[in-house]
Length: 378
Ligand SMILES: [Cu+2]
Image (cartoon, rainbow, N blue to C red; front, side, top):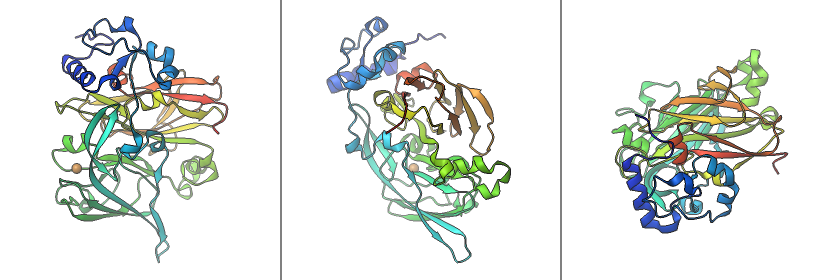
């Protein structure tokens, strides 16, 4: 069945009407009246853009159906800022073991926490370290990893890592599932290198996933182990001069079922609907961009990333040092799929360049942002 470009299904439309009524001007509005003819029940439709971010969007907003959240999410109240989430890698605490091996220790705690996922829209999340997505754990290939996991939440939870480890470290029932008040220490070696994730594996899995229990788990390649691509490996290894030449960022594509009807009302990368549309991500046209992209969207089978006016190389799962796809402008990921995107704007003029899920509905419901390409990021 064909669905029109801007029409929500009845369940979602009804939901938005209720939200608009409940939170007044802080919820959902549109800047393009001509695109709103089917939205007669939206009291906010004539509301003009009222904040600086909406003004920045201008024509881009209209070009994409005029749908964007209006208002601001209180990042301070949430305790995390989507701008900071892009780059705040958690390297844990590093020590050298007697046998010369590097031990990297992380601490992760579960907390039930209400978060604001769109202006005026609150979601009762279950979080790792008080944030969604959880901390972006980053290690180097071959290190021994130790994750001290404490559950201060109201339900049993775990950390299930995508990677290689023993069965007893798998974070499934009977292997590292932690009751409220309990603790478990996961320990394994960091392999294979790549762009991975972790998530809770308590049942029902859909519930624990869509509540916010997931995060990035990046293993950088050890250049010494990859002599044939040593330079590339070094560019991925956090802390090297080669890595410092890149503009790296983490985007976890997610969605939120705010009325618990088994489908998402909001989508985003890094939780806050339209956060990077309202505050575009500043990148320098003089440095390449590398995105660690992870799809943890529950309920929808696939998500996608489309880049405007540009093409990128893609490394599926991040487990290779040569691209698995070259010169594409769209990548599709099923649930738990992830990969690394590499591109640059050196041949582009400065300006705003959009990126978004190419399922239009997901973009309009929050998964859309912009790169603000400038000469140099100061
Ligand atoms: Cu859980």
